[in-house]
Amino acid sequence: MIRHLSIIIAAGCTVLAGTLPAAAADSYPSRPIRVIVPQSAAGSTDVAARALTDRLSESLKQNIVVDNRPGAGSLNGTEMVAKAAPDGYTLLAIAASLTITPAMHSKLPFGPGTDFAPITQIADLPHIVVVHPSVAAKNIPELVALLKSRPGQITCGYSGIGTSTHLAIELFQYMSQTKMLLVPYKGGTPAMTALLGGEVQVNFAARSTALPHIRAGKLRALANVQPRCPSCRRWRKPGSRATSTPPGSDCWRRQKHRRRSSTACTRSRSGSSPATRSRPCC
Image (cartoon, rainbow, N blue to C red):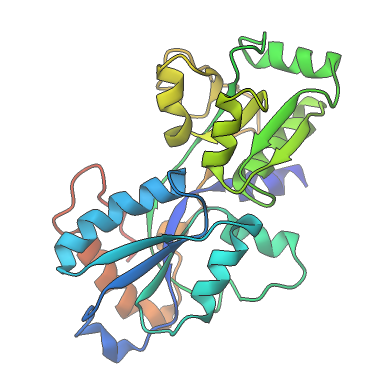
């Protein structure tokens, strides 16, 4: 069970499109495109999606609108894309929840493997364990000791039930044999705002969301799966790596959508900057 969780939460940002007729590829796009992000604005998925769409809009010579539809652990926005016309003008930018939700729900209003045609991976988003400055812990062993001395009393905010952050927290609690009081929010940005305001004490945040506040001294980082910040230290424990990117998502596609995916990948890479260049999927 614990191995299964560690694989699933090794998840990141993949752009998907509703099933598309191959004949439409030659004239695409002839009108504006909408990219639905099923998470809150300014969150890690939103930031990655906007970085890509800004460059992609220039390359395609067409407007691309990012539409945030958070809620229900990304189910709301994902369902909107699944029910949209399969013409390639409604896209989905989503992180780990697309691979997590089938394991958490016996019945979904969409089929993750049948209602979407993956295009490309656009980001890899590692998590950082961060605490409010009022928390005495300066590293992971001290945090574990604190949690064990006050079981169920330390509050931990996260971006919603069924998200990669949620599973990262549950994995941490399982491996450390601790218990926190979990408080769900409608996205990573509201959860981060709550931590900054002292409403909660701990957060397992995407690095892109937490790093500006760590550098400003408003939060303390305890562990990072990719420690590029001097205050971060890697918690080296088997199975503890947690990101927001599904393994193999950069090459995950169905054969009948190969032509469409290849066209989209080529266009997304052309003229892109190193910061926004996507990894090939074809």
